[in-house]
Length: 252
Image 1 (cartoon, rainbow, N blue to C red):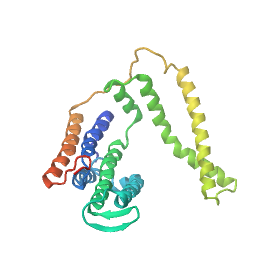
Image 2: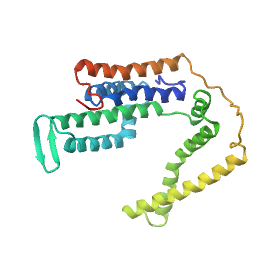
Image 3: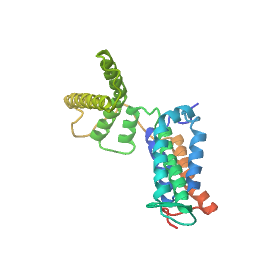
Image 4: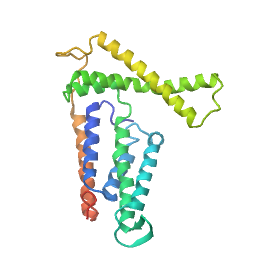
């Protein structure tokens, strides 16, 4: 089951903006929890299982935890002091800010992962050009870049197999990964240069009006998705105000 099937890719982008922008106005755990809970409930209904979401977002959870720890130790002190040593001070306010930052990072990032999953680059290009009226050269370049993203994993796997065939599979230290990353970088630059030359030769860089093979428009379902995103984003702030936890930009 996927409620987002057939939704315009531009709608997904606008939905992310509508649901995440209100969260930037307040640093509190309540509003972030509302959006995060909604995202987790709707993820399986949008074609993103919880296990798949975890596999794609584990690094975001780690990043959110790191941000929360730094806020816990070095956040603005206030209220009861639980621990203090040199520059480190853990107080009621720093604990509050740490929880709010952790949930806020996940509440902003997880909807991006859910809404951007399984988006066809060609459909996205059609929407960016015909709905948002972005310049054709920018759109075509973006679509080409998205098409190449899928090749990155294949390049990494191919280089790992080549190194294994040369007897280098037992090297897993920093030197091994730096060499692998450099090889991927060189391969990407070469492929990008060839792609740019090929696209230029086929007239993708010409000026003037460009036609599109497929029409991209917004339908009733698209407006419904954006409306729900706006309601959730603004509603989360309303819940925070009702609970008395709303703090404009963390002040107060």
